[in-house]
Each structure stands twice: as C-alpha cells, then as structure tokens.
Length: 183
Image 1: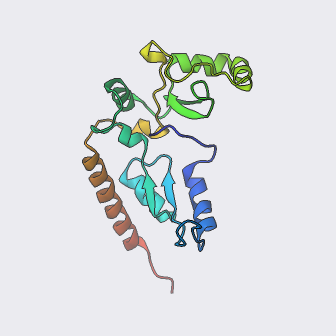
Image 2: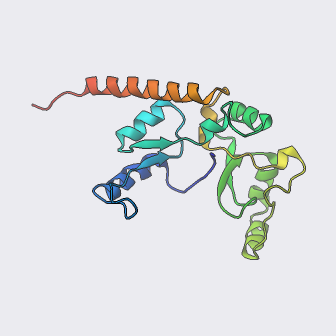
C-alpha cells in the first residue's frame, strides 16, 4: 500500500538479498526462492534497476495508491500528486510500528517535539494517535513512500503497468547495446 519502511535502502539491500537467495529452495514449494524488490518502485527506471540488480519482479506500493482503481480517497490521491521527495516522514504514532506518511503538521509536531511522550506511550502499549481516531482529515495517516515525490498524476492501473514495462524494456534493451565484450 506504500509507506512501509525499513532502515536499509532498496538499492543497497536488494543485491544482498539476491546473493543470499541464490541457489536456495523454498521449503514450501521446493522450487527456487524468487526475489521481489519493494521500496521506491514507481517507474520503468526503478523496475529496470531492480531487474539489473537481480530481482525477478517488483512490488509497487505508493504508485498504485495513485491509480484510479485504488481504494484511497480523493484527498489521499491528490496529496500524492502534490508531494515532493521531502514531504514524507517515518512515524510510529498511528500503529506503534514504523510507517512513512505525508509529513503533515500534526505528524511533524509529534515526531519533532514529543519523542519522549511517544516512547513512554508505546512502552505502556498505548498508541499516541491510534489509526482511525482522527476527526480532522489533516491528522489522518496518509501512507506514502518517498516515491510520492515522482508521482504527478492519477492514472489507470493498466496505464501505469504498460508505462513501467515499456520503459523498463526500452532501458534494458538499450543498456545491453552499451556492453562491450572484453578482449
């Protein structure tokens, strides 16, 4: 759904995961372990990069939140098209687990001025701003990854997929032409 987060960037983590999974068999199927890249996947360029790093597919979150078929509301979709790369923030106030959301004044206030309060509440098993308890729209959690900064319009899902696959194909085909055999 976009906004799920970790501490290691996809471009750093992905090659290591591919190395670890190479040659492994799934205990569930007995077949090979397939690597699917996630985090920052929003365009043909990111798809091509993930494939070049060894992924066999990608999991697209934030980009599909801004598709016509997504269940996100109009406000959320509009936010995604107006967000830049620095307009998101990691927080635990809604669920107790790290998530990336729109950097609203409400969330920024919690994260910049009330860290001690957040930690005390979480240790007690309480959530500072439980998911779904916000009456004001600007206090609600609008999940989105940093890829939101690259999204400027809401499109049909098919158009997004066609664009991503077409661009990735073009880039990967072009990249192979740049390779020169060693003599």
